Image (tube, rainbow, N blue to C red):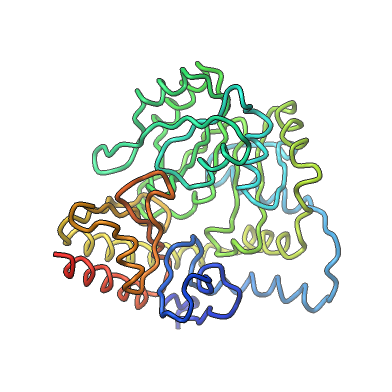
Length: 376
C-alpha cells in the first residue's frame, strides 16, 4: 500500500481555511485553486511532532534550538551547494514579513525597490506598504520558458533602486534560474550597487527533474520548508545574511514587530529537516503528472497557452482576452476560483494551483474547457 495517498480528497470547509472558507463564496459550490497551499495531508512525521506538543500540554514561549540551525545549514549545503555559517541565520515567522523588513532596512522613499513582473504580489505591494518607489521590468518568453529581459533589467537598475527582490524558483512563472542567469543578475546588481533580496521557498518543488536549483547567495536569502511539506499555516523561515552589518540592520527592523517562533513551528521544521526523502519522492511525481495533464489540456484549447513549469505547483496560464474577456470572472461564475494575472502585474493570465487530488484537477479542467467552448 502507498504510504502517501495524494488522491485522497479531504473536506477543508468550515476549518477557517483561507482557501476554502472565502467569504466571497457564500453558499456557492466553488472549487478553490488560488492560494499556494496543497490539498494533501502532511507527512506522518509532522503529525507526530504536533502530537508530541499536544501530549505535553504546554504552549509557552520557545527558542530556536541549535539542532534546527544545524539542520537548515546542512540542507542548504546538501541540496543547494551553499556552505553557510550558523551566525548568518536569522529565524523569522515568515518570508513576506522578512521581505518587508529587508525593504524597510535598505530602500527608502528617495530610491526604491525593483522587481521583475509578473511576480508574487507582495514583491510589488511592499513598495506601497512602505511608501517607497517601485521599479519593474518584464519577464519574457524565451525558448519555451519565462526569463528576464536583461536589457530592461539594466535600464531599471540605472534608475537607482537600492533593493532588488528576486524570486527563484519564480512565482508565478515557474522558472528555475540557471547559473548563467544568476551570474548575470548578480553582476548587474553589483554594478549598480543594488542589494539582492531572494525568496527561494519553492526550491524543492522541481517539476522538471533535470533542473538544479542554484542559490544566488545574495545579501539576504530566505528559505523555508513550508511549501514543500504543506505547513504554510504554521509559518517559520530562515534568512541567511552573511554580512554582519546587513544582518544587524535587518534585525533592527524586526524588533518589536516579529513574534517568537511557536513551538509548533520549531518542532515541525525540525521534523521536515530530519525526515527521510520519501515524502518528496512521492510528491514530486504526482505533481509532475498533474502538471503534464494540465499542460496538455490547456494547450489544446483555442486562445489558451501555458508554458511548462520548471518548478512550483502554480500554473501560469495565458489567454486571449479578445476571445474570453475577463476569463477569471467567467471561471469564478462557473465554479472555479483562480487568481487573476493582474494581481501579479501580469495581464491576460490566470494562476492555478494544481497541488491537489487528480479528481479535483480534472474537475477544474472540465470547468475551464466548458467556459472556453461556451465563449466561442
